Length: 108
Ligand SMILES: [Zn+2]
Image 1 (spheres, rainbow, N blue to C red):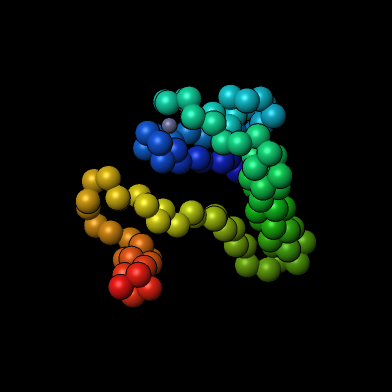
Image 2 (cartoon, rainbow, N blue to C red):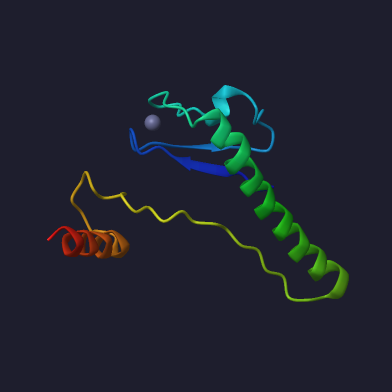
């Protein structure tokens, strides 16, 4: 069963929401480390349907495999952590570097 892993950029923590959890509970969308919350409307209208869509697509792939003996594939959606290293100054994200170049170009 799929689960959701959420990254909190406020404190750098992560948490997971599992199938057995109550996804409509405020705790599901709240960082357990710093108690920041994902906006309720964004959670309900964007995050949950997106998670459901991924689950549905993986279920279809599985049905294709079991029903028609096609090769089995599953997929994950990995967020592009654009600002993951901005605090530590470690390896920078290539996309973030390109955006910075673009910003420098636009703003001189
Ligand atoms: Zn947090």
